[in-house]
Image (cartoon, rainbow, N blue to C red; front, side):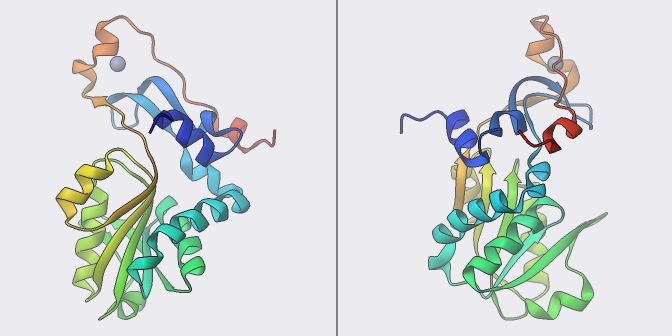
Length: 203
Ligand SMILES: [Zn+2]
């Protein structure tokens, strides 16, 4: 495929997509540095765009015949709910907890004995994905596929999870511990992330 990952992401995210997924030199909240900055949560303020992306993702996930689509709060669940509606499936969400991710007790019964697709907006290393899959299985659900708007490496996820993984765009990116950042070593100044208020303003 000749289209660059950046072009596919921009196409997925709409006319202002490049402002929600930027390349550069960034310091993340946890202290690590990286070459990519994503603010997909802010895309969900435009339900039409979220629905359009969900519709495309749902089409690629339909063959897996899920009873329920589950996503981690925040962005993952917002994406998963649209996908669930498109697939005419049930919807469950998982909340971050000290031990990983937890489906609220009152909705766990929804997963028991059911085929479940896990949907997230962005999958980075897959740590959250694995935590959610464990929680789904712990609630008696049967994961049948994983879907995401953007994944850092879908092939590696397929191999590691042993599940079909459908993504709308793959965007490889790099992160480093702050002391080991080659961009710092090369003397590159840090880029400022986009002000959230600017991303919420209509064109
Ligand atoms: Zn750096």
